[in-house]
Image 1 (tube, each protein chain N blue to C red):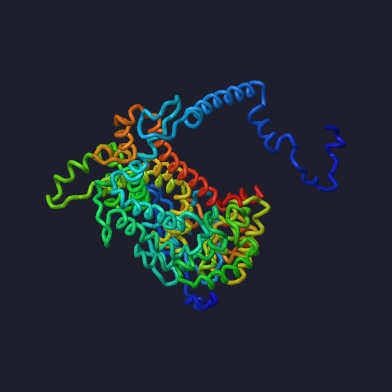
Image 2: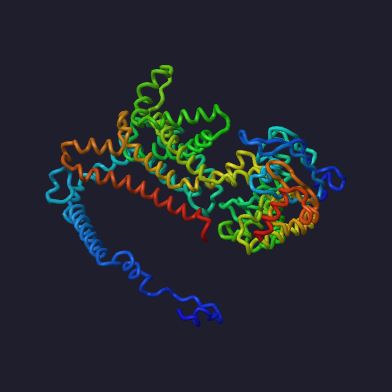
Length: 369
Length: 258
């Protein structure tokens, strides 16, 4: 740089200019990320080749070579997957042993779930104010639809099964574990020693034990302590135990969020005269929960997959029914196909939760808009 | 409702803040030592002193962000005790502005300003918003009302924080080093707002090292060191004729850095 250039004063500020064409768009992205150097290009090509091998052979197996109709194992003659059983078994996969004539009740409960969730999950839902009342009533409506009463035939919970059981236990656990987790997290930080110690004892003892153990306890040991005429329903017991288990994890996730809130936020809330509960509700928790979203959703996903453990106490969820089916002589040897379908059900639900959490994090990001 | 009407002790000569024999310890550390202070309504006091001298702790005791072990604090006729009712009553009357702004990042500027009036004073929302807009005009940022704090500059955030405190219609304003976290070019816009507030007759206790502000608006400058009030005087006397060696040393350090 010459002295002259150094001392030159700019007459006016330079105008904004577009970035070079080679650094924007798909071509620019691929250049900087996939083919930035000789070695990077080689790795990219190898990765594309491996992906091609895996995906093409799966597509060949699952779709091109597959058999889709037939009444038993021997109707499937090609090398590919045998999907013929789906037609006959999907009913059990979804509804378990629920009476065939009554499964419409499950379908209605499932459809009603969406208007019940919408006003809490999304902004600008039309009629959100009324829908919220519906959401609060939904657990009662769903319980009556599923278990019967008010003129509907009573279906005992030992008939519950299939994916419907996973959804029932999973949703109840998710909806209940969040508030309990919040209360436990606040309790653990309480200045009152009794509340703090009770919270710590609950969190540590529940978290320190495998869920399977808790389910055994609920099934075998609890009835010993309860009066003989009090019979807790097995599905209710599972929901209680799954909720307790997830709440303990939830409490620790939320405590992490609470600790990330600077002390100044508490002080500003106090200085303005907000009470403890108001400052928690209006200032601290909205921020702490926002920070905790990835961990909370992680716990939700874990909880949902843990619903498969109900098989331990003799309930047949979708995985239990799949296990039974794989050993059925009519459809022997179809374990790949069966478990692929089970995995697909779980993946759809868990991936939706994950995408929703990404959406929520973006929506709540107040730093750039 | 003007500020004067809500202030029962205005112009009666009775002190609005009365601190007698205040002692406070952090663990074994004796942070405030036998503080006696009487603040008249509409009085503007600047508190200065080296860091660790207890000046922030002193004003934080006044709205009970810190509790004290010995002595009495009376604010606007209400004694500060462990009684939560009294603490809440005092916090409603005393506004506070922090060094690090402490705006609520998940709420818009306007929501920051209306939250306490709506939830603590039970002001109707429309009224609270109208008053908040009035105060945002006064601190000269009404156009930022719908933005989030994270989108504002430090100076703008601190002006919002001042407006937020004023929304509670306080009789007393505490400032805890309000310009220390700001870039130099933003200090003036915040000081201008504070000067305007001082001229409107607000009782103010300001912890700051902005000596220009002190000589312009303060009725009294208090110098603290090691938890004690070493010297207090009018700004003119304090700056031109400091009495103690420690205040002389402090002033020479402060002025040489400016």
